[in-house]
Length: 159
Image (cartoon, rainbow, N blue to C red):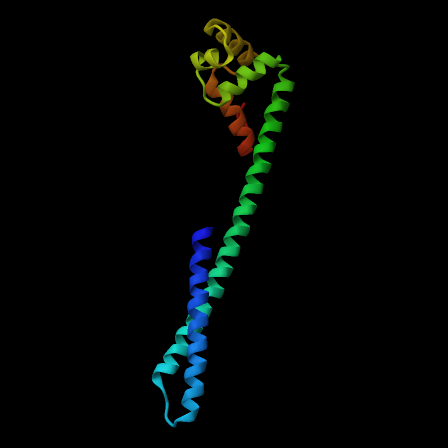
């Protein structure tokens, strides 16, 4: 954001310089007869710079607006996914410990990682995962993840 604004500031300074110089040249040209191609070019450059400044500003403001919209959309989606996960965990009647293990499983952690993160034995985590899978009606971590992907995609499940 700083770089484009800095470039626009330089463009503005250059445009002001060319406009002031062009006005001075035009005033001087009125005192003498004839057409000055240099003054006309300076005016053309000034108009082009001013047009570039206006277009750049519009483009930057549009990008900022889109970035805000995307951030808001992402925040809404993250909140909706969190709410959906919590709802599913309640439907399955997972204990708080099972919910934490299930969340790590959804994030892609394997048994060893979950055990390390929770400070538990790998056997305990395997047992909890088995209980989670049974309550969710799936047989594996991949199937657990696919349940949530299907929900997000709103794809009807085959019988």
